[in-house]
Amino acid sequence: MEDAGLEFRATKDLDIVLHIEALKPAFGETFWKFVEAGGYEIRQASDTGKPIFYRFQKPADDRFPAMVELFARAPDGLSLTEGSRLTPIPMDEAVSSLSAILLDDIYYEFILAGRRELSGLPWVGEDRLIPLKAIAWLELSQRKEQGSNVAGKDIRKHLNDVLRLSQLLAPATRIPLNPKIGNDLRRFLDHMTGDASIDPKVLQLGDVTVPQLAARIAQAYELDLQGGATA
Image (tube, rainbow, N blue to C red):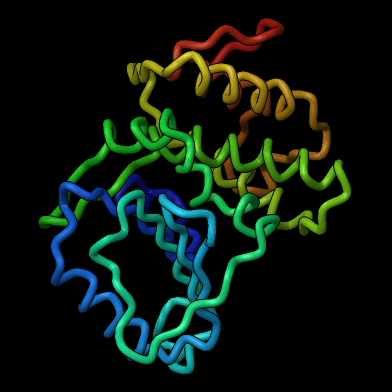
C-alpha cells in the first residue's frame, strides 16, 4: 500500500497458508524453531482432523508477532518437536478466525489462483483480500447476532480494511469470482451501503461516498448491485 501512496496499517499478527506442493520437511523444523525462539506461551491447534489450524500467542520476545495463525490442509511436515505440547482451540474461536475461512475449498482455491511472488516469497494482494475480509465480516457479524462473544472492533476492522484496500483497485481491473464468493461479496456490499455509520473521511479515503466505494468494488468483481451507485 505504501507503493501506491496509501497509508499502511501495521499488523501485529500473521496469517500463513501452507500449500502442500510447496511444503518441505525442513520447513517444519524451521517453523518450530521460530516458535521456540519467540517463547510463545499459548500454543493451540484444532482437534478436528485435517486440515489443521494452528495458533500461537503471547511471545516472550516482543520482537516476534503477537499472534501467528497457520493453516495447513496437509500438515504431515509439521510434526511436533520433542517436548512440545498444543492445546485445543475452542471451536467458537477457530470459526471466527479469518484463517479458518480457508477450510472452504472454494476460498482456498481462490487464494491459490491469485498468488503473486516477490523475491521468492508468495503473497496475495487486494484482489484476494477483499473477498476474504468481506466473508470474515459477514461470519463474525452473524455470530455476534447469535450471541457469541465477538468484539465489535474485530468486526469493524474487516470492513475498514475492505474500504482501504478498494483504493488499490484500478478502474480497468476485472476479477472473475466463483458464484459462491460473488454472492458473499454482494451480500457484504449490500450491508456496507446500508450502514450509515461509515464515514470515508474518518478513514482518510478522501472525498468519496460509501456507494461509490461499493460500486468500485462491484465493478472490479463484475457484480450487479442493488441501487444505482456509480464509481
